[in-house]
Image (cartoon, rainbow, N blue to C red; front, side):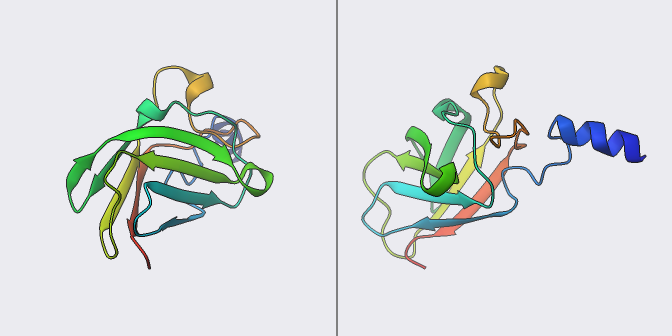
Length: 122
């Protein structure tokens, strides 16, 4: 089992995925959602792999970038209008077909799909 776990780790299969080892923030009146990871991310995941809802209603994602200190912050830009205080925002990531465009750590370990819930302003 140890050898399998090591190989699975190489391919990111044992990763905590999109839902693990991170924190998320969204400020009222801003279309930016920031998800900060404990480790550096690979730049430029394809924004079409991300979807969002605000209070259960679909919301467009217009851009996704990686930046911040040591490239640990994922910025997801939502279509206007911006969420307001107390709105429930959920960002969902579904890995696409092109490995180079997937969300991954700088080490190459891909993050599996999943959702991150955020309450705006808290």
